Length: 346
Image (tube, rainbow, N blue to C red; front, side, top):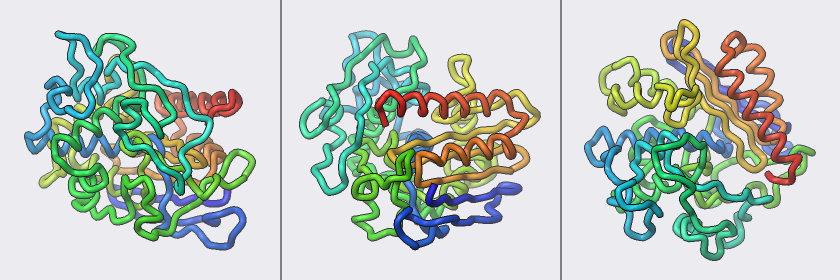
């Protein structure tokens, strides 16, 4: 693992941010607190906050048929059985799984738009989105739930997704090292950590661009994710001037469908303190966030290698020890990732 960045939170405040190692296994440039990493599925965590900002402002109705916000693409639902934003956030969208790409979209090639992906048209290399069962009936973790939500939010506001999330989340929280622009290091000239595979080889061209940023294309720093975790805690506790309505954050951090999973967050409600967090895996990257609501203790870890999961294992065995349900969810996610790699998928 060439490099990593960690942020430590105590009493709801970031007390330390450190960079370790280098941005590239072949070069000497060090990881610093300003180095950006791809955060994988932690993107869903941030997308949820953006959606709840719109809901807090009365612009997005979580219980309205999502097709009421869509015109350029429509959810393939049956009459009388709509999908709602609440269902998408809860992984109850009913969308069919799709085959994983063995690699991603090279940043210097033509990257499909989100609409290309939803319609299954070139240059996208995945089939069109389909329905597997009636929305609201079965919990199935599927990144497409968040891609549909992204399309609905951009059509609702008329803003691109990077612009929308910057206005709703990043600027209010001072998250200057974060963006949903798939090629942000190039467009902004930002220092970034190059991804590496399990054998330590650099991902071609440094990183793959993700045409579905809401689900997995977030560029960010450990300090920025620590600021977001602290803000979610603040909102949950009902502190003044919260970014999102307290009742919505509390719903976000409530187990859904009888699982240790809320809206885009893994939860542990079995101990004396509510814990929430999320893991992230992008091509060549591993990440995690973790926060205790009442004590205000937490951490963020970003790494630029698939083998970053070994650092996650270490953090689970130390900082997260004794939280059986939460650590079990993370351990299962890690083992599933290993299984996918052995099967030829990234």
